[in-house]
Length: 39
Image (cartoon, rainbow, N blue to C red; front, top):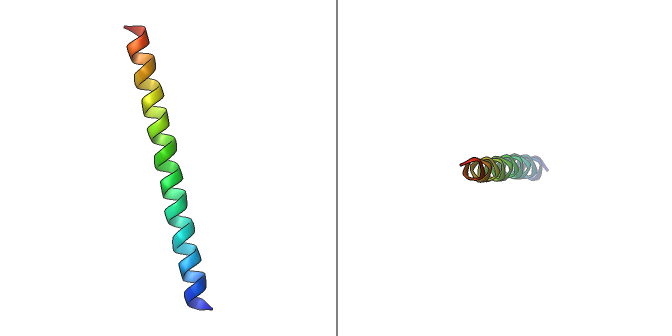
């Protein structure tokens, strides 16, 4: 049971990190796009 809990915890951490990276990537792409539009 402990190993399953550890696995789920690690999975959630990886998913949240991946989600944060995806949001950051989308934000960077959008701001870069706005920067090009301002030029």
